[in-house]
Image (tube, rainbow, N blue to C red; front, side):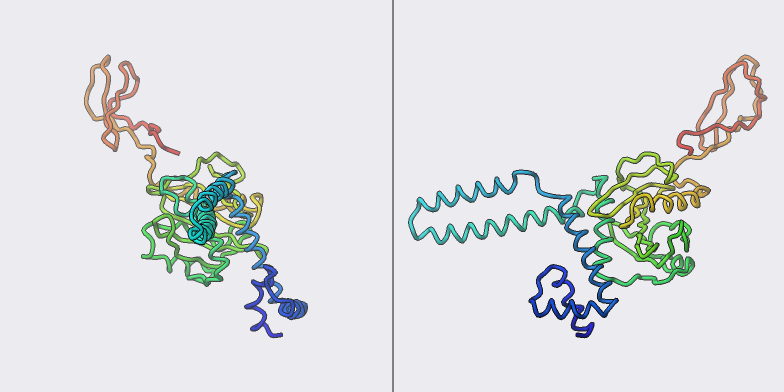
Length: 325
């Protein structure tokens, strides 16, 4: 059996939905074909990942029992009416069950429709995109490990400046990048690989975007929030006005060095939205010795030097302004 005939059956084979004859043919082919065995393993991993993701968003306890109780009550009402109404009641019951199942599936899979104000939305949309990208086998927009090629391709396509793209971060090699539309904005998704595992780094403007509560993680060299959804690990953090979301099927311990190396490389970059230290320059005016001295900094904020200070009338004083890191 050729690969061309086997590959369309791999999904059904993984789900146990093949006929016995098809299953025997696929099994025989898999013994001799490493490429199809690898493809089958990927399908099984993605299927299990989706099942765990849906299980993590299971319906509230008792919901199905409540639906069933309502259906039973309607059956009793229909049974008490004229016989001609019984077919209609049976039809109604079937439609109601179908609608209930569709509703449960929709609730499980529509996490990306959360309101923009929900801090968890960034996590779930990044995870959903990562799963969709792997299942669809979509090609990268830039299938190159060259930092320069990826940087040049993004020019003019996003409304913010990407951090310096690295070809290697803590043992992860750059495979390429994609342009994505998530969270009502364009963003860049850089794809890295280590030991056969993919890691997607989503980089986006943080303007108007809420993120989950973060805490300082020394191993990540930043304040991060960590999430585990459907067998995937996600790390979210903010830096220099940007939001980062790292998603992979690797465990947290293997992703933290990536996060730390990236944050260390960005440490010298100027803060985009915070106010840095500003020098206070006093006006060249003679003040009586016992009077307070006034001056304005570069932002136009007036400051007062207490009476009796030993500072001369003109002196530059480095004051830590609020918001400096």
